Length: 172
Image (cartoon, rainbow, N blue to C red; front, side, top):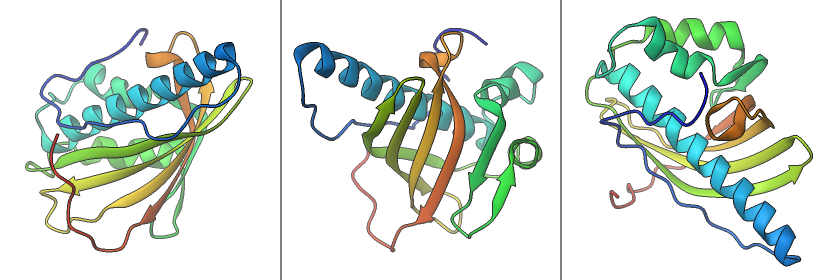
């Protein structure tokens, strides 16, 4: 898949937090990197929300909007301490189509942690509702720049940690 992908009907939303320092050119590159991270994190969670809720049709094209985002060596450290390969994540997500009809995902406090050459690292909060066991997580994502990917980024690694039970932030 090339170019930005906007999943229609999704509710994942995000904001970028943090400060940008350095020269004007450095600020611009860092601000662009932060915006790309935020846009890709929100885009992928819109895709996930549509898939898990069943609002996305169960087609190869819709699933590829998720699958193509991860590099072949993608790994996931789950909030329960599990460690999954790309193939394991793809199998789980593919099988979960439509299993959470009321799910809503909100993305908050996206922050660019580091940008060095082709690698970017971002942190964010993911707030889920409508799952029956609403659990929020703090995540750190490692991206590799890829001009052919949505927002110019592909996922290399994701580390999720459960957040303490807290009230949900306002929608929007």
